[in-house]
Image (cartoon, rainbow, N blue to C red; front, side, top):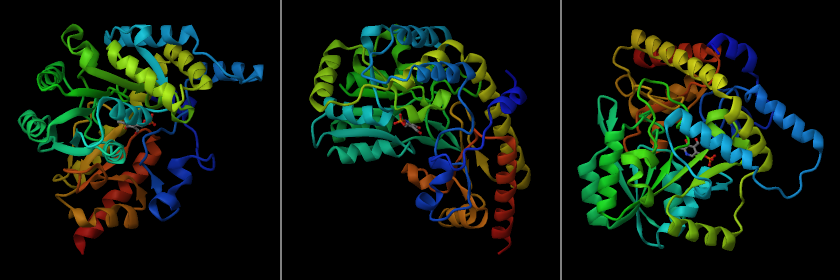
Length: 397
Ligand SMILES: Cc1ncc(COP(=O)(O)O)c(C=O)c1O
């Protein structure tokens, strides 16, 4: 599906639908009336086949205790195999109510209170929150940043793993917010280091279907034909791919049977939720029929990215936009034109935009903004113009 067909069929006004992005601005940003480009969901309806499957299920009218349909596993495993070559088995799979919930579960299963857990900043901020809230020690390795091209700092990771006795790494692949799709070589080096140092790895692969650049996505499960899979767990969901966050239905993938036994015991003890029936109904239909829809979404994201990058570059050649390999979240370094202390003032108070500010993502984030491209070109144009005018006014002061 091309971008124009996608936009005319799926773009929708979400205001006044209890939607966090538009209807929670006052609470989250202190003022209404901002144009929102923050939280990672989209302005687009789910694939029409998924909508239809939901309508049919809703017509039945009964929502008692439910099982995961066998067909769901089949649809998801086929999608993963066909698109990425990732081999899965049903016995490796469980469900959660969200990726962050499952990260918290695995931090508690794979480490003890007081143990050190590493994250690679700048990174999605709940990683740090989960580590701290579960009483673990947060160890941060900063990604290397050469002119907004990010890479893993393996030497720094190795040193800190040794010095801080790190037991677990929470790894984001593709990486939110810097937009990297990690190559098989990068993943192998990182996994080899972790295996040698007996560091388990939680792979958060929630953005893995949102591949915008030329680099293919490779799951941690596939590296060296699965050589490292006993040492890792993978978390994923329909929420980013198909805009289904409100369904609270996420995937937990654990190839190591010992870890799976611990997981099952923990879930039994805590009585944690096990996904959601409507999420599974919609998800199954989307995995079966949603490929065209996804191609349409990715075209919109590519086109919006090219527009923002071009406009910013021609107004201020010093601004650096990271290459968007994956996710629909654009990472922009404004520091060459706006001092990091003033970014919020310029973007929120003057341009009237609600974005994620870089320092929310920890070390290496200051001076940046994360701008959500999964919206209409009209919204993107308004925001880009507002941003450029506000920066011009700032520079003239
Ligand atoms: C890397 C990453 N992990 C997890 C989440 C949230 O997932 P969930 O809503 O399933 O907890 C997000 C949402 O933006 C994310 O970017």
